[in-house]
Image (cartoon, rainbow, N blue to C red; front, side, top):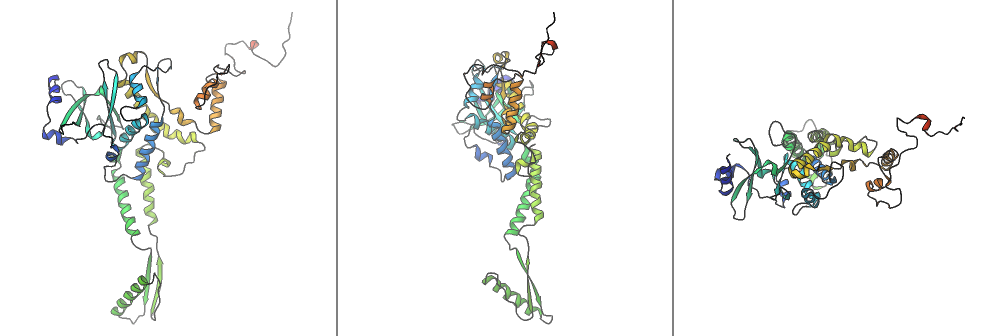
Length: 407
């Protein structure tokens, strides 16, 4: 696509065929929940995973650091994300991104820059309104965005990849991420059929009757007796009276076959596998972990850390100006907040970091969201008295034995 052709694309109306090729959706629609639940059915286990993962991702503290691990405050993109773009809060913005990424496989955020290349605004775009394409002439990646304007006709825009944040699930050779719900299509269909069978059983009764007739009773007589028993049973709340020559035995059965309940466990296990979360995240089993730190470690290793790395690299690449990158600015999600575990584990960790000179007393207070102290020595680094530089002579080390002086 040549440059003049791109200009024409922005000013002309698309053809009817172009409009029909992509779903026409407006940008920054506040009613995202309607889109999120637009499919016929979403299994409870999938909603549980999406809800939990997106809430955790949005809860992670976001920082901007430089090469000296200082926290600069002159990055416009970071300041915008900290406050939340447009009508979003920071929490809602990242939660919506992560929810769409896990539900559709892709989440798109268009960035708007001023003449200095600084980010001044961001817009969350629904996945159905955005499609990646490759310019056959230049090999550049663009995103085709279908939007609605105030004149009630469609306009197709082509946005360069450096102006579109694209958060995605695992992809296989293409640009778009794989939709996890499509991977689970067979599981969802199977689960739906099991539910249908279960509801059919629930609509019936859990009691059956076994009727024994006398050997000399003809078929018409048997049919008449059965009708009388059924009528009496219905009109008297399940009360039965045996007549001469007839024996009635009650047969109790389960409302739902226990084997059908096992399929729910299978579905939950498959959902957990596709979303790379521990099975107990979707109620598939009880955790055997001995502490909260161990409970979070599996989720952190296989799911959250790769996702966080993707967010950080995408933001670093596309929202920082060349000047920001020269200063060594980069985004950092603090995942250590998830490892605060129980009181005893935190205490042991802080003790190790204090005794080895890594943390000050005020550092510990800050990590515990407590007010730092102005007392003398609270910002000093200390080290245990039994630790010495490796090149220190043994005679210079402290000893409980008295030193004998010689002339």
